[in-house]
Image 1: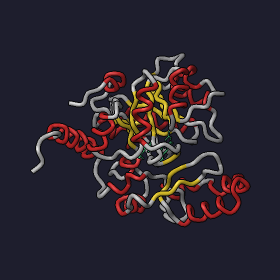
Image 2: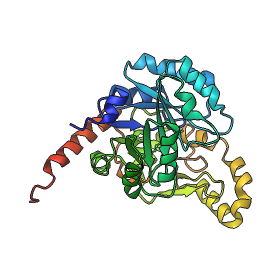
Image 3: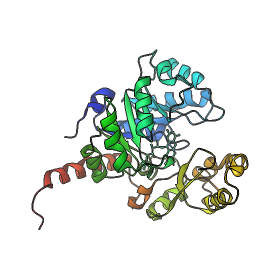
Image 4: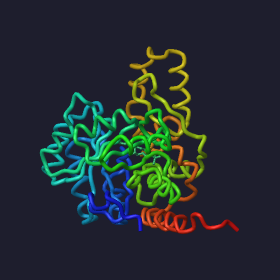
Length: 318
Ligand SMILES: Cc1cc2nc3c(=O)[nH]c(=O)nc-3n(C[C@H](O)[C@H](O)[C@H](O)COP(=O)(O)O)c2cc1C
C-alpha cells in the first residue's frame, strides 16, 4: 500500500530506512532490515577501513537485497578513503549526515553510480545538500537519538518538503505505524528510524541497554554537547548529568575537556553495557518501546498498523 518514490529509487519494498548507528548497525542489523523489505545502513562511524570492508562483505553473505553505508565526518576518519572503500566494494547507496560544505562529499560520491542520502536538521541545510546533488534528504528532528538540531520533526518535515525537489524522509521520533502515517501526511516519502531498531533481537548492543530502552519513558533523554558544537540526544545517566553540570559551570571553556572525556564512551555504553558511565544515544521515541522484537516484526507491524489506521481514518468513532 505505501509504496513511494523512495522504494523505486532504492529498490526496496517498504519506505522504511534504518539510520546508520555507530556500534549498533553492523552487518546483522543491516541485513535484517534489508531482508525485511526496508533499507539497512551499515554505520561506518570511526571503525578502520578494513573493518568496514569486513562489514560490507558479511552483510552480502546475509542478504541479496539492497543496503547502504553511512559515512560521517568524525575525528580520525578520512572521508575520501571511505568513499574509495564504498566504490571498491560496489556499494551504490551512501548516507551522510550534516554535510560539511568544505568537503565535496556528495559530488565525489556522484562520480560513481551511487544514490546519496543526506541527513539534515534544518531547511537551510536541506537546500544546501540539494544544491550539492543529494538524491534523498532525511529531515531529522530534535527528537532523534544521536546528533540533533533544534527543530522538531513535526514542523521540520513539511518545511523541508516545501523547500526542496528531492524526495524527503522523516526522521526523529518515529517508531510505529502512526509515525509512518504522520510522516507521509507531512509530505515525506518514507521514514528513517534509529532508536526503535536498537531494541531488536538482531541488534548487537548490550542486553542492559535493550532493557533500559524498554524501561525508559519519553522524559528519559537529554541533549548534551551544546558547548562542543555537536549536540547529541542520549539516554540520561550519571555521565550525562556530569557532562551537563560541566557545560553549565564552564560553558565553552569545558569544550576540550569534555571532548577528551567523551572518548571511548560510546563503546563502553553500547557494547560493554556500562549504563552509567557510557554514552547511550537514544531518541524520545524510547517511551514507545515496550518489548524487544525481531526487525521483521517491527517492519511488518508498522506497515500493518499504518494501513489499518489509514483505512479507518474519517470513519465515525464508536
Ligand atoms: C545509537 C545511535 C547511534 C547513531 N549513530 C549515527 C551515525 O553513526 N551516523 C548517523 O548519520 N546517524 C546516527 N544516528 C542517527 C540515526 O541514524 C537516525 O537518524 C536517528 O536515530 C533517527 O531518530 P530516532 O532515533 O528517533 O529514530 C544514531 C542514532 C542512535 C540512536
